[in-house]
Image 1 (cartoon, rainbow, N blue to C red):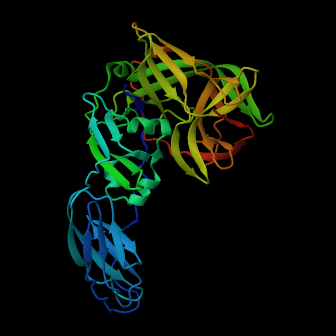
Image 2 (cartoon, rainbow, N blue to C red):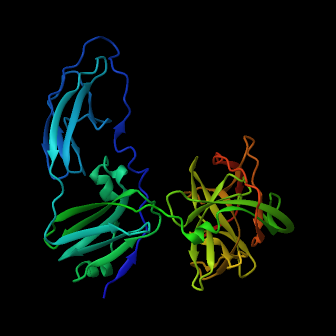
Image 3 (tube, one colour):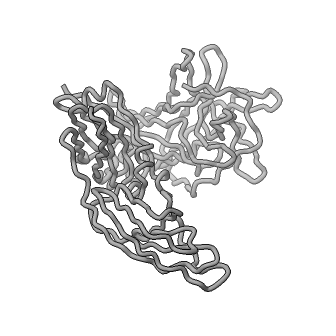
Length: 439
């Protein structure tokens, strides 16, 4: 019987954006007009790599290599480009030294033959038809370990192989048993992918003899077609909440008050996806601060939009990151912030277009039951565990009022809401003396 696993993608676009690259710099020395001698590089090509070497140049303290318009700097006399596709490559090398003009580029060409397979492991993959997903299979004999990852092809084409290996995830022993079975491990990536995009699947395997092999397969996903259930949510909506959680500096905690707050929401598809959406207008920070949601059909066929908690909006400096976080009530009457990705808001649309909102209820690691009540953007320092309010202006005015409880009165809005570019987020100097409970 086949075993099917659904696996999340490693988001690695930013990780490999640099990969040792350095920007082009003005040529010329600092103290005289002497130009360094031009290097005479040689190259040795392998199945997926090229090693370039050259003799030392008098006066040089570093060397710049150029491949496909990108520069790489080293102080050594050799440099290896790894994880290259099959084909011919031209590499240029110049010498740089303080007080000298840069040398001219010396040039060398080499041909990469392409990765070959081994007879004890195969990796096959293909894009799923009419759906943004990748189906694949790992099958081997005597595979002792397997680490895997999925990356944007554009990112890894110029990445160092060591960095790729360092960002792979190990399979469990149970999953390895399926790899070594007659049918292999049948798996899929079906979340977090974009349509019409090239991805590279890597599997780093070792066998009983200790032989290591890095398999790579490139797959381009099919064009993303927005699902019909997703289209039903797109557009502008009005809603309201009946309570707010207002932070009191004097009490050092939030107070729950009866106060209606009207919401003007804009829901747009996340470009390149079929059922992921961006929700504007939910945050008290402003209508242009995005929240993220996923549309799916519930077990009874009801159209459901889940708006997620613990979604990052990026690094805001000083060790803080902007996160959507949920202020949750506990079964014992208390409140706390809960980290962990869960759908804080769950919106259900029936066949008549009527929408009902429910708040997520879950269980903490301690066994306590919590219910999401207010979700907004906060500054979180993962190292210190401190939470800070966010601000909209230079004065650091804190966002100290949160919409509390489920949204009500959903109606389609006739007029479009203006959506600007995302606000530049920053933390205020108001920190919340509250514990963060991790799910």
